[in-house]
Length: 169
Ligand SMILES: Cc1cc2nc3c(=O)[nH]c(=O)nc-3n(C[C@H](O)[C@H](O)[C@H](O)COP(=O)(O)O)c2cc1C
Image 1: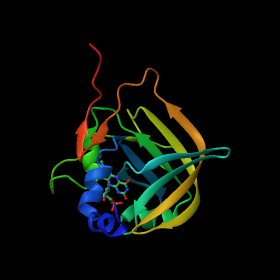
Image 2: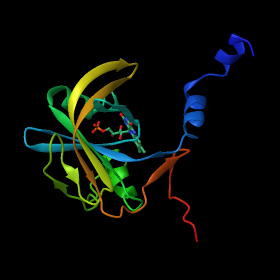
Image 3: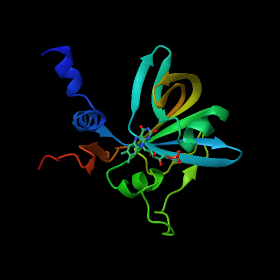
Image 4: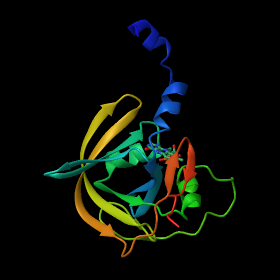
């Protein structure tokens, strides 16, 4: 295929359609600033390095979370369980105006609050902000870890929709 054809096939809609085939879990990234915890739903999360222990999260430059992280010292990544779809929508700003938020609470932690009932979580110290187009690529040095005893199944995001793992009978 020529370069020209490849380029003609490339646009943001098709990019989303193709990337949507890459199934991910769903997290809520939290960061504490001035005694308040801000949360944002994110699936652009990657385990980056084992030595040192690093993760990365990609945050839209125009998200409120981006300006909070620029001032904060750290953040936490909370991995959602399969019943936390409403929380994912709430922290993505997909929530009817004026409606009560879904029930949730944060436990105080390093960097950002730890969302109760998440199946796993990482507390991170902010390492670097790297330019990634309309997102910041933010790397975090892992300073604490949480794993639920006998974790329940994760919430999955695939083709722009939430899914559940297909359990074996
Ligand atoms: C499943 C899902 C995954 C998302 N992943 C990301 C992500 O990785 N990075 C990001 O910047 N926004 C992501 N978003 C969008 C943000 O959650 C959304 O823009 C949010 O309103 C930003 O919040 P804030 O401006 O209050 O910080 C995702 C949304 C959904 C529903």
